[in-house]
Structure formats: structure tokens, C-alpha cells
Length: 152
Length: 193
Image (cartoon, rainbow over all chains, first blue to last red; front, side):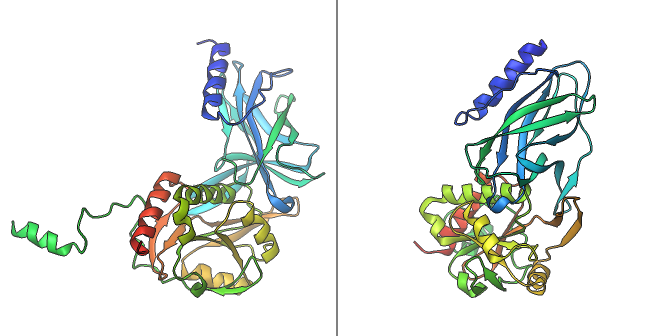
């Protein structure tokens, strides 16, 4: 399967899984990375929000996500939730490797972005730009759809 | 034949025995529901306030952006699937971060997820007593460098019958259909139609 076909199949599979939502598929501009299904779970009172997306590496070399930033939040951190021994924990992640022609999901209960201290009022239905930073110095800015606390 | 007869005598109710999807081994091994905390309407409440309801008890904190919202979303989905039976159930979300989780913060948080959900907080010692009673561990992690901190906490979800007896143990990994199945069965078993 070619990379293009894989991408297309992935996008179709993802869209089929979430028929009710509309998703922006951001084309790779300066990187060989594609991001789909980007969304933020908005919580009340400016409490920390979770950011989720599917990150697809269309190249033959591993991509290393090292962080993220957004003009809409003072801080964006790459985190991982883990469950072990009956405990829920959250860890900072320094680097997330997206394998060649592979993908990594930032998903509830797993890898995610923690977005804190909004710089302006954010509401459900908004789109917030988030810039992903990679180890090779490249960046990719993606619009994350703002969804309610109980989105699933 | 004698074995069959004994088996039939042993069954209090007709029909096959109920099958549960969640962990039933906690029944009889954890103390009855008992606490004194402050609810998200800033009222002092005890377990007696929830007698007559099937109670789902989950510990977490509002600055938790990932697992707590995911779990509360799953519990909200379960309540939606229960339909009219949801009125006989209450989700009690107990803060393990009482320093930041005032009743007002808890109120904003739980109402963002759905109805029949109550946020409970209290003094550090009240929360510690409640957590100890249900063997719930929690500890505050280091500063995350942005003025905040995370709280590692037990992920157990305890489900109590209408008289406060512990019946089931779920975890955030249990599926919404499984939790819904057992909640429906428990409500029907505990509350006569």
C-alpha cells in the first residue's frame, strides 16, 4: 500500500468512526506529518484541558514530537496517562516518536496535550490553533476543535 | 437429581442466576457507604442523604484534564443509557485535591458532565478518612513548572446498593456497555418495580 493510499484509508477509517463530527484534515506543508481528529476537551473555570489528535507520519524516517504551543494557552505540555496497580497517574513526555509510515494517537486515557491558562475566553465550537514542535526543528500548526467536557 | 433439587432450593428466585460483567468480589469485603463531606451546593452531606439510590463512587480531582473527564464522561454515557432508571442512581465524585477543589469548583465541574452527578469535597482530614475507608490511595506529585501539580490517585469505581452495601468494583478500563449492564441489573434487583 502506498503512503498516499494508507493516508486515505486512515482518514476514511477515522471519519467513518466519527460520523457526527466534522474534522479538519490539515495537509502537510513544511513537514511530512498529517494531523486529523484534532480536538480539545473544554472544562469549566479555565481548568486544564486535554488535547487529542491523530498524528500520521508519511515519511520513511521517524518523526519525533517534542512539544506543542498555542497562542490560546499559556502552557501546552505533552503528557501520558497511565493506569497501573489500580492507580491513575500522569507523566510528562519529553519525546513522542511517530514511526515511519505510522501514526500515534493522542487519545483520552493515553498520550495527550495538557493545555493550561487560556489567554482568552474559549467556547465550545471554537477552533484553537496548536503548533506541534518536532525534534528536527520543523513545526506544524493545526486547528483543534473545541468540544464540551463530556465529548466522546 | 438430588443435586438439582438442592440447587433449585438454593435459588431464592426463579430463573437463571444473574451474570455480572464487573468485579463482584468486593461485595462483603469493603465497609458500607459512610462519610461526612460537603457537596457541590456547599451543604454538609452524609451517606444517609443517598440511601435509596444506587451510588457510584469515584475519586479524582478537577485539575485532572484526561482520565477524570474520560471516566466521568463514561459514567454520564452510562446514565444516559439507563434512561428512566438513572433517577435511582447517583454518581458521587469525591475530590482528592481539596486544597483546590472548593464546592464551587466541584459544582462547575460536575455540571459540565451531566445530571445526577454530585461533587464532594471537604477538609484534608475528612477526605483522608474517606479515602482510607475505601483503601483509596492518593498522593500529590511534584510541581509541573506552571504553578500546578498532578495528583496520582486510585482509579477504582465502587458501586453501592440502596442500603449502602458495596456491590461492584469497576475501573476506567471497563466499557460503558458493561457498566450500564450491571447498573441496570443492580437497580432492578435493589429497587422493586
